Image (cartoon, rainbow, N blue to C red; front, top):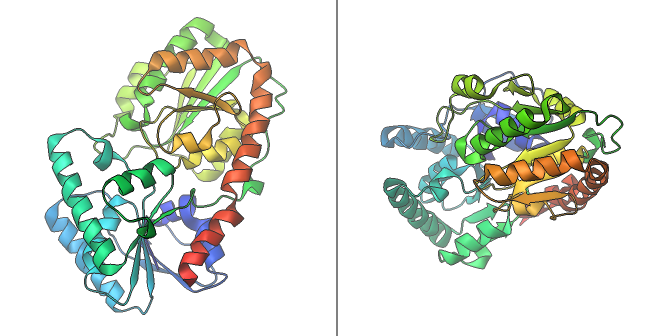
Length: 367
């Protein structure tokens, strides 16, 4: 059984994995059904509007009760909770269902773990304390997606046997066409895909893009694809972003469907994600599978996707100047775009292929 925020998130981030697991076992997916579900063999969806963002105590209690009722009425022995907020609901329930194995999937240590706000630091300490209790008392397992997050939990006193590193959710690389042999580089196109959040480094990217566009005019093009996240403290105002940055060279696509994102990977040349921290950036992996060189911050999560100078370049965190330098390097050295793009696809196929990742999850199910 998987607790996931919404059906749309299931489709974009967990579908391939769960459909693979469903070939071996019946899988229940608990999520908010915000759109009609496709019929999937051996997968049963349970509609539950459980928030993946609110830290309101009353709302947390409501969601705890919802999850409790679902867990009480099923015989599933392994239960996965995906994302920090849903993991909290799982932690509380783990103390009441000692015959079930709870697995907490951290797709990234986001705002709760990187914020320097005093109140958030206090909440973080409490969160880690009850998580550690669930792990030690109930034999729960934590899955993280990169070495840095693994080291973080070890530093907080978690035992190695309670942790697993699985690099992402697995992606079928065959659905992404290798676009690395570039035919037309008269306009160098840079692409950002992700939620419009400040901690994705979006402001720094837009500042760099604006400077690049002013210098190179119609020789460059910049695309931003992604929607807002009103429940996230790092959410940015889309109208203000457009007012300050949108131009002939800088275009906002909004929150578009996955097939439209895949088309953008084909149309654009270089992928940029200046995030402050990631679990494992799926968009960066998808872009690399499409034959795009990467420009990423040298931070947890992003470090797993890039070998500096081989399939792209690292940039300094919170530095629009460094982003501009690396973007400009591609404009001035167009011959490396195809070479790095080919290397990027090979790198991600070798490290993040679906079969390899899916089997690691199946092993946990069968333990």
